Image (tube, rainbow, N blue to C red; front, side, top):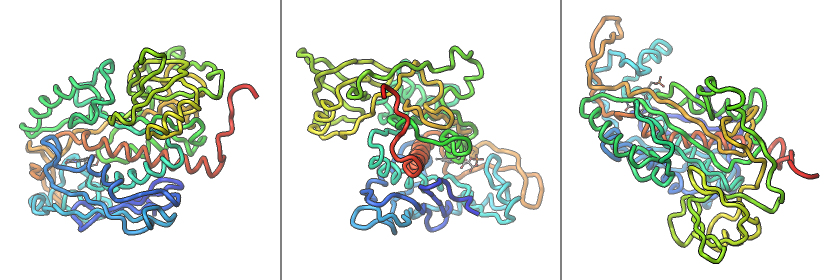
Length: 442
Ligand SMILES: Cc1cc2nc3c(=O)[nH]c(=O)nc-3n(C[C@H](O)[C@H](O)[C@H](O)COP(=O)(O)O)c2cc1C
């Protein structure tokens, strides 16, 4: 049974449990020649690491990744890659008084009903420590994606904590890394801090909604019927601990729309193949008709550059869409140390209710997935439960816990998106090669 694995070609198997000596991921099917170092993976693990601020569990784990196989002289060899993370702060005694009780909201009871064995140490395999392995695999997937589709950008952020939603009009992607909640709204970050601090002090917890987008995924990725991109994304997100709902694009709200409102209207692509589009954080006119542009996530001024021959300049919620001559843009991108490949211009859509996927296949628009996590079950309030021998009892969960697991679920959602996108890029390359369905004059 391969129930600890996911992915068709980029196949990830995770192993280990919360309080064992180590856990990790075995990745099979990664293309050879992908430059990778432990530091590249560590970057993403550090984002998920516990104990970074008062809003996440105080369990102190270094979450240091080691690459045990499949990489030689800094590149993947095409053979299985073993990623290992040692558990260094397992205090099993935190769980001693719950050995014979089932924690409500946890998988203690169902694992016992299924296997008849109780690993009471932090939930054993059902613990969200397992998600560290996914984040490690996701870090590797991100590097492999760069080699196949360099324009792809995967970003996760929180859009709701308990009853508090972000203000979509105040959405600023640059804010995501500036606060402990990965929230793209500066005011929400302030309000949420006060709200969550109150909950934390009272020993309670709250749920959240996380949105993960993948920009720059070429049109045509995915597969029909049983291999749909949205099917795989939904399964990937739903497999994360505490996730109770997943939606793509308009999701559940689509039920409230009419056909006129929901259908994303299509209009003709840019008249010339040589015109490409690029999303930017910012661009300003320098007075001579040239634009000074700031690529997304390029805080370093040296990576800003000047571009001429701009055909169109479209302000969007999360940046600026620039249509520009491909040759000009690539020249400027390379000389400023940015990636040369840009997203080819394609059909235009009036909106993105589809979440970038039609019939299980990407449209070339942003892929948008949201998932809801339930409130942390381990709370300091006494709850009713039963013992292994079936008697009624009560329980307080005293271990170290997150008041809102949504925070640390953000990098996990990003990792799952990266693994699924890479898997489908590889599947597409295997079956179709280059994109076939050219739209435009023959
Ligand atoms: C990153 C992350 C951290 C988590 N940390 C905790 C925690 O500290 N305490 C807790 O009760 N649940 C935590 N959870 C959720 C539990 O692991 C999860 O609710 C439990 O295993 C039962 O599985 P289910 O909710 O998916 O049914 C966390 C989830 C994630 C994604």
